[in-house]
Length: 123
Image 1 (tube, one colour):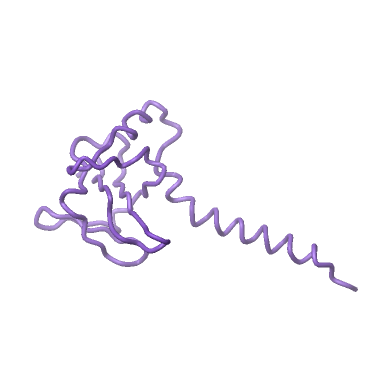
Image 2 (cartoon, rainbow, N blue to C red; image 1 turned 180 degrees about the horizontal axis):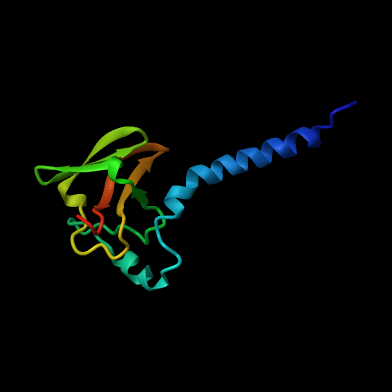
């Protein structure tokens, strides 16, 4: 039986697309689209140094094991490594969304640091 090119490329392409979606899913879920009343709140979030955090779609929700506070400072685990959160990147005020969130920034795909960080509402 002869294998056609399309018989090979289509399944590989579908698998690649599914893998890409799984990697993008955590950041895409950071803004709770089931709570549209928070859209304006997300858009208005700014860190202590007045940097806009964006609308939440590029934020990542963090599990409790992926962040910690010590001596008034925070650090987060991103891409398997611990990153210190600069004090000026912290978002002050109540967290209306609930979970701890971080807005990392990248240059050419490389993790550079934390643009914004908001502890969860239970802190």
